[in-house]
Image (cartoon, rainbow, N blue to C red):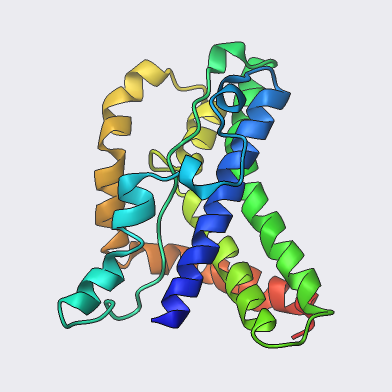
Length: 211
């Protein structure tokens, strides 16, 4: 339970960095909407989504209260409430909007890199445990957010690069959270993301951290 709670606190930090990166990048490219709404912050309470930040990530606690436990192979999933972006204010329009989407995932990989570099000099428990969990979760969530399913960043990156008219995919965006729920409960996530996670965390992160 303690391990899970530590993981959840790290999860809140990583998704807050993620959304703050979106807000900062949008502001940098001409859209101050998120900044003016107070979303350019690391305060997790400004980014909470009832479904993606509370219900799904805390579901193992519900299993525990019901006398069971987290499903076998459970890995923390979730997302924050997306920051508001007015794409019409972004300049350059197409590149700026793609970079706003990319920035969230990039921020997670940067968090993992920072944790790996700190591990080279910090060898004291429980700091090493926290840094390992932070690196692991940051890599996993960044990969998860690259899945091309709404509301994840991968979907917006794909549609932006493919120049798809948002009006043509409005219904898909509305169904996005339910599609994610289906994917999370199938072998797809582990089968697709597992090898990439093993390469980035098991290989690159550990090599940088010197462990």
